[in-house]
Image (tube, rainbow, N blue to C red; front, side, top):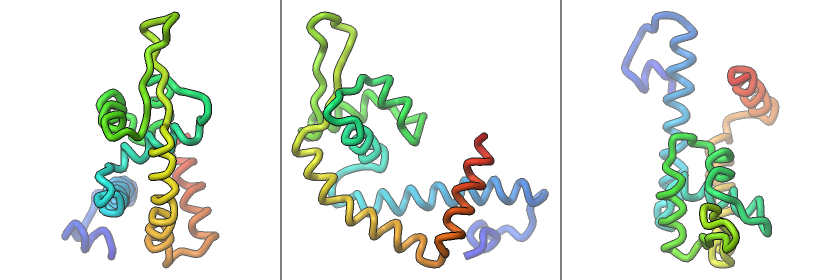
Length: 150
């Protein structure tokens, strides 16, 4: 559906404003889709992102700053996300004996198993979202978004 229809707005100041609104709207739309897929697992998209970051670094533990730097949503409260995931048994949070300010965070086997279960579900979600696009169009979108952020 066109942005004009989604927002019930027929005019924009210019194509730059329309593009910015389209990017924001689409980003939110994608997050809602991810959250719907993750809802039955009692996970948010941000929690899923933390688990994937930890799986990617495994077996090396990360500290909170490492996680925050790698997160897709830089505004997320990583401390709160880590604590919720710890309470669910999906990661561990250990204070370093030699430096009490240093906290090492690792994904647990339970967390890895959950991601193995979620991988095909999220892959299916991504394929469903992008099914109308060719591989070339997907690559072009990525290139343009990278260019926008550079």
